[in-house]
Length: 183
Image (cartoon, rainbow, N blue to C red):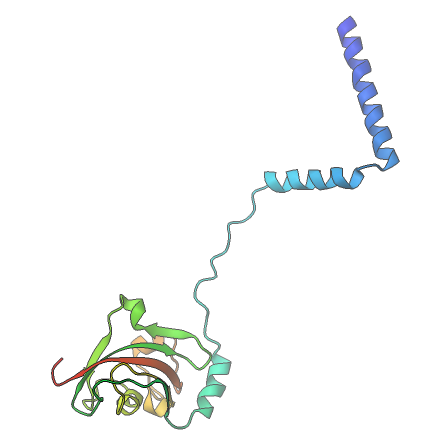
């Protein structure tokens, strides 16, 4: 009983000292900050969100596509190797973008394997057939391709799945790696 009484006196003294301490306003802000920090540490937050791939801005794309009326070819680097001509096989890396900058495909995404085809056979979109002609191996170009030279009003299913809608202009950065008579 004696120990219980001593404990109660110590507890009352500690509480009254604490109340005096808080009444004077000393260190109240620091104490609150410590409590908030402890609370933040004890309450788990939501897991970080993975934003995933950025979605295309179709309003912007439609407006920009309407402005691209003709094929625009811009050399980024002039190559020094053989020239791409009709009937020749070409190998190249590319990055395909919508007019808002959304990347819908690139060769490095598919394991870094470049694409290979024969110019003039119609195995790729017309904008590529025309835009790659005259390029030299080692060169890089930007091709701004109007919808009519891309997929037009009826894109194939694989293009639709990539985010390409009907009547969409396309922009490609291409790098010519090889030109030859055989694949």
